Image (cartoon, rainbow over all chains, first blue to last red):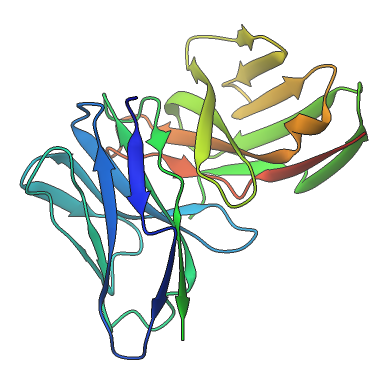
Length: 112
Length: 112
C-alpha cells in the first residue's frame, strides 16, 4: 500500500533532550512538510522541502531541525531549544506544491 | 497569521441533518482545499476547488467558492454519526510561497 508513515505514535522527551520524529513516504512525492498542531488549533508549518537536499523554514522553525537526504524520508528533530514541544506533529507529502496533501497519522510528543 | 478562518468553531447536529461550515480568507488564492481530521489522527483530503471554479461536488459533500467575498462553504448532506470530526480549510496565496495555510477548523458532532 502506498502511503506516508510516521513513527513513533507517542514520544516522551526529557528536559534538555533532542528527539527525532520519523516520516517516510512511498508515494514518490517530491514535496514534504512538517506541521505542529496544538489542542483545538489549526496546523502551523514548521519546515518544508520541495526536493532532496533542500528545505525551507516555515512559520515556527525555531527549536526544530530537519534533513532531506532521501526523497522518501524527512525526519524532524525537536531540539532542547524548543521550550514548549508538547504537541501533535503531522507530516505530509504532495506530488505537486500546494495541491492535495497526504498526511501521516501523527506523533504525539509530550515532555516528562 | 491565519489565511483561512472557519466558522463556526463548533457545530452539533442530529443524524440526517445537513451541516454547513464556512471558511473566510484574506488574500487572493490559487486554490482552496477542505480536509477532515478524526480525533488523534492525520488529516484526510476531501476536496480541492480552484479559484476559477464556483462549486464542486463529491458524494455527500458540496463545496462552493466565492472569490469576490473571499469565502468558501462546505456542505455535508444527510449527515451520519461517522461524519463527526474536525474540518479544516487550507489556502495558498496567489503569487505567494510554496505552502498551504490552515484555519483552526470547525468541530462537527453528529448525534445519533
